[in-house]
Image (tube, rainbow, N blue to C red; front, top):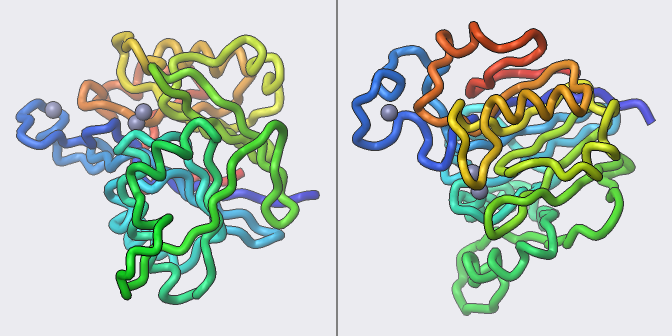
Length: 260
Ligand SMILES: [Zn+2]
Ligand SMILES: [Zn+2]
Ligand SMILES: [Zn+2]
């Protein structure tokens, strides 16, 4: 199957977003729009077959959908249930107004219980007469799954007390909020990824996130040709910190378009 991909960075900020409320640092006060980061998410547009997928529904999901003029979604891929990755989920209901069909949502088994605790009303008959987001929940199982014949690989990565699911579609991969890639995953994905958007957070190490130097090393081990760093904190200044990156590595910015 040959399909082409276009990826839009909906947001590349860490859990607080950048600027952080109340912060007066140079990055948070910057006038450069590349230092303004909504919470991390991407839109994946596939042609032939034509499919539009989103990874995660951030607290700014509505703003991100309006900014990119998204009028329908064929599926939602969830990485994990931390607030910055799923608390905009309710706004999926707008798509139901127009399309009147349940939106398929994929998530790892490890996340289902916490997700249902965060959004109980989506799964109960409450008697409320308004429209809640109507979804069909798919639990990821071993091996790739398909959407309209497009194979989607996935793997679960350690992230503190939880896991984060990374996705690979053809030669594109997206991974956020992981501590590291286990060796077995590196073996399995090595040489298969041309372009990868992966979280780098900041230059300093962090107990539950891969840092920029660690993610750059990951790109090298996976043989990634174009590595794009996302989920960035206010420690990262777009222009200043882009300069020191090795060839083939870039910082993401909101609205960035990546063609494959
Ligand atoms: Zn996060
Ligand atoms: Zn700041
Ligand atoms: Zn997280």
